Image 1 (cartoon, rainbow, N blue to C red):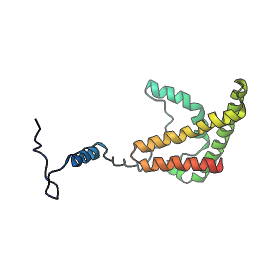
Image 2 (image 1 turned 60 degrees about the horizontal axis):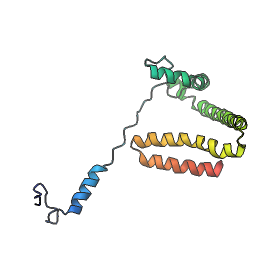
Image 3 (image 1 turned 180 degrees about the vertical axis):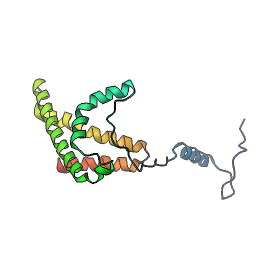
Image 4 (image 1 turned 120 degrees about the vertical axis):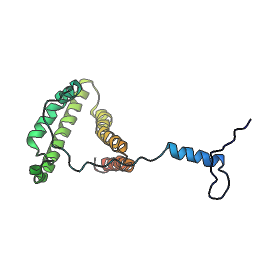
Length: 166
C-alpha cells in the first residue's frame, strides 16, 4: 500500500515534487549553514584574580609560569592605556616567541638524547607536530564560530608559510 503525500505543494512548474526534490529539500535542511557569531567589540582586559572553580584553579596553576612573566613584560592592549603601547607588545611578543622556540628545540634535543632518538627524527616528527597543533586548535575554534573559510585559509596559509620560511 502506497502512502499518499498530501502536504506536498506543487513546484513552480506546476508539477508535484519528485523524490529528488524532496531529498534535496531534506539535505539542505540537514546541512544548513550557520550564521557567524558576532565578534565582541570590546574585549575585557586580562584578570589575574584567583578563579572560583576547581577546574579553573588547576588551569590557572598550570598556565601561571607562562602567564605571569608575559603579564609583567607585555602591556595589555585591551586597556585604554595599553592601546598606545601596541608596538611594544608586538615586539615583546616576537621576543617571547623566539625565547619559547629556542627552549622548545633545546628541550626536544635533550629529550631525544635521553631516549637515544636522533635529532633529525625529533625535529621532523615531534617538533613538526608540536608546531602544527596550535594551527589546528585555532582552526577548530574559528570553524566552531561559523567562519569555516577562515579556518581553511589559516590551515593552508600556515602550511605554505612553514614550507617556505621554515
